[in-house]
Image (cartoon, rainbow, N blue to C red):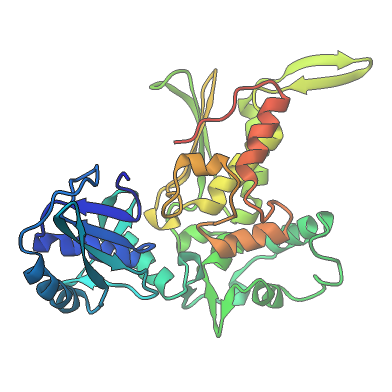
Length: 354
């Protein structure tokens, strides 16, 4: 078996491999097998197995405070050791540093990645962090009105459900914790979210080629209306529609189907890592559209997993929840599928993800 998310082979033991054990503990668990060829897993054998069986549990416990299962095995007269590590619900550090398994690699967590990792281990997402000094009367009502219109139109909520104050609406959307308003509420509904979250806007540019920018726009304000604004601007200013007629009815055919474009923009808004300070980018070329947002796939996922049946795992679940209630997304992880289907229906190439 090849090395993967949950298996790592080492021909011999070095104390530096404690980092790999830490990485497994902070991810989905795994097995470190000592005495096997790197990559292939062929048994190589170790000569100091008895000493390692005594030393390894003590080294691991001393460095990380955890006790994995350490077992001795024999195959064709050659001995090897397996260290089985379960996933832990709390952050595990190795000599004061945090590592996490990603694919077949081990990553050191620092900066914002470490902050977000610790939050998630505590059951808190980045968009769920309470922000001090923000009050309900700091918000204007326009974004709340837009949310209500969308929610009623999509039948996700009724008029009776929404006959409440904006303050109660935020509470019902789980965007309030005690006396504090959460980051997601500011991003979704505040008229100037960039006062608290730098880079929470969208940039659009038309490029003649990979170098020459001809013109550009920026969309600022609450996230709940950002997809509408982006769609309207791009289809009125950036895309050239080919006009045809069916009888007396005029039909404008655009280079990208609206459903696919809108779904892609909404996905970019919901899954963006807003802690980076970078805006969402839409690069429009004569023959293609590139949509870019900071972020990453869920742990253990590859791009292929996007095209397989999967559950919804939003990077910002509170933001996603509000978009769902407003009828702008589904909660079934079908966004990629819907984009692909829309492109096929229009005879357009399927999108490429990287």
